[in-house]
Image (cartoon, rainbow, N blue to C red):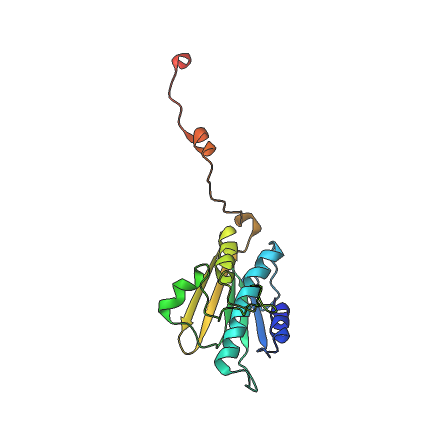
Length: 195
């Protein structure tokens, strides 16, 4: 996910911060690689969106001409029940009053992508469309997980992805929207044959 985000920035002629990755497996009490059984595309999308936002915020905060950027830190911890991925940046943070808005569709802290005369985006927009975080959180919730943000205005933002560590506990969470469901869950009353 970092390589793809970095490539997007490089196409837009930006340098990006480095990334520092660490992992901890609480089951074996060691800093060993963490393995999970999930659909890779879902985890990739969530992490990609968060990394892209962290990289952009760090570059904007420290300026395009900065010689060095503080690294974006990624920590992966596999516990007995949950797998948590923490992504932390020093991109200036977000005011508390705007944290809840970050998960609204079409809301973005990034400038709107530039459009050409036909209404199409010029180049590949890095951010600004307003659906990255809401969809990332939806992916996490789909597998009984969560995506939360904590921010310190003037410093940076911490993103926490928590998903079930065991695939058996990560069953899909599907909202029921069928009226047919109700016809099978009603309690039948007695009739003349049950006497």
